[in-house]
Image (tube, rainbow, N blue to C red):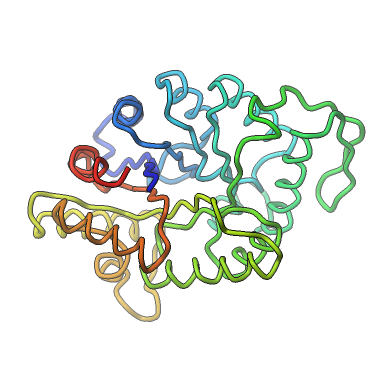
Amino acid sequence: MKVGVLQFFGWADRKIPLASIYHRAIERFEIMDQAGYDAVWLAEHHFSSFSVCPSVHMMATMAAARTQRLRIGTAVSLAPFYHPLRLAEEVALLDVLSGGRVNWGAGRGFSRGEFAAFGIPIEQSATRFRETVDIVLRAWTEQRLSHAGEHFQFEGVEVLPKPLQQPHPPVWMAATSESAIDWAASRGFSILMDPHCTHAELASKRGRYGEQLASAGFSAAGRDIPMARLIAVAPSAERAAEVARRGAGWMVGSYIGGARDGGDPVERYVNEVIIHGTPESVLDQILGLGETAALNYLLCAPLSQESFTLITDQILPKLV
């Protein structure tokens, strides 16, 4: 099983200097590089202290500079907020500077506040996303690019640099909804699976993706399908549950918001979404997802520094 880390940049306590959040993450990248993780995947968010990383490509350049073997993933580049030619240039440059270590994940985004602040109608999110992805992939593989689409038009543009990995870096599409899963499968894209669905939903979505992929004439064999899971690990189950509840409260209050189906969203996260417990219990839960959800690439989102340390020291060696 491959194991990576989904790196958020949460700023829950604004008494702490924001720069220290970045410094701690960079130190984590160096540890991951030596410990045997496959990749760090960087989360892009805007206008929220939930995760203060508005430029995953800039942060990825720093991650690449401080590591030697760790792959550098975007989880995700929020494609509707970029001009596709600029996005193609930035990711290709990152691939060159990193020595060909980029994993490109692209997503549509869902925050109405982000779309409103950037002046982009959220109703255009799907069409902008899909058109942008198509242009980026063509920009990496065609010498000169012409395009006349719904949102972008240009003629005979030479996009430089080209990526170091040929024909281009490996590509994943963030897929949460059934429509997103079906679209990705119909195009033969591999998918990134989100950290906010329940374990049962994760298994159901993975099954749907496999079925849709096969019906479109593609095979799931040999694909890495990163499944992001929020994880709280501690020496005792009680301590881990406390970390999980605190993390769930922070997410619901700062970013996700609102009850779901009339239930308590914090308890939903603690009971159905977050993997939490002692190292032995967490390992068992991860292995269980390998059976129920065909998990072959665990994308950890540690909810505390203690969780990251215990994952690195006690869980990672038993998975990779």
